[in-house]
Image (cartoon, rainbow, N blue to C red):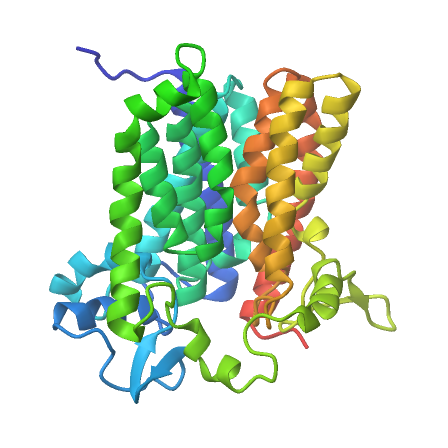
Amino acid sequence: MKTWKWNETVSYELLTLCSVFAFLFLLWMFTGKWPLDANTYNSYALQADAWRQGRLDLGQNYTWLELAIYEGKYFVSFPPFPSYLLFPLTFLFGSDTPDNLILCLIIAVLVIYTYRLGKLLGLDDLQSLIGTLLVVIGSNQVFVMVDASVWFLAQTLCFMLSVMSLYHALEGKGGVSLGLWACSVGCRPMQFMFLPVLVFVLYHKKKTVSSWRDIVSENWKWVIPPAIVGGSYMLLNFLRFGNPFEFGHNYLPEFTEAEFGQFHVNYIAGNVRMLFHWPDFAENGMFTVDHFGNLSMLLVSPVFVLFMIYMLVALAKKEYAIFRTMFLVFALAIAYMLVVVMHRTMGGWHFGNRYTNDLLPWIYFGMLLLQRKYPGLAKIQIPLCIFGMCLNAIGSVVVYNGWGR
């Protein structure tokens, strides 16, 4: 029986965790958003509490929330998995679940798994620490970790579940990995597009001892967890909207009243400009923050710049096997963003470009594949991490305090 003992890896893991929460503590100080605060935009808790009471709709309108209106009833318009998480807590708290405190727990798990992902791929403790800080608080993920509002809770939970699914795929635990991936889809539906990455990883974990056919025949039980989770979404959608693939967003007034609906090619040109929008400056040279605008994904999440540099390095070093995996991630990320830019909005009220946060776990995984072979690359993460931390901290404080234009 293994006994737990203090070691350097544990100390670095705790150091990473403390670093992230020290950073968040500063943001809580300057925004006034604390872990014990009530959550005004608590759609998921309201939905979970309605389930506890035996109903699928909310029973009334909440005018400050984005609710789907279908056959005269009001439903939560977002994918349901966060409500699964909150459901047991409604027996203690009703609809007043401690969402901001739960968000802190999600962040803690996210940080630990992100750190361990680096360690699992062969990085040393310091490299894993720096990489975790880069992708978690040196990116636009910062903005959505400050507040547990419905949109931000789902994105942070999705990040956590995606990293966990990658970690367990690398361990060869296909059922756990695919089950967690299915849970992430229940937070952000387009995460289904990254399934090929997990399949690719699981195949390469098994191919040394089995053919593709043998892998399928020996591990068919892997599909049971995602089938159960995905089936629950489809059943819930059917019971609410009569369509197993409709979770409610198409019944939001902002989309039912829009000329082109929720997704349309006419949105692409404007959204691509927002995706790479350069900062606006006032006449005095000061950067002005627009809390209903977007800022280039390359600025708010420098990890994307680093990923492209790593791809070039992989080519230059003729690391073709690594490059192929990185290119798979890159191609899926491009496909993901092509769908995003067809959406009517690019995130609404926020700082940065928060829809791009959904790419971060997968992009980071691609980077790690090269960095484990060339550990010296970690040095260039430091200035980019500092830049990302400062930009997102200042921008988040400005937007949360309503100081933007």
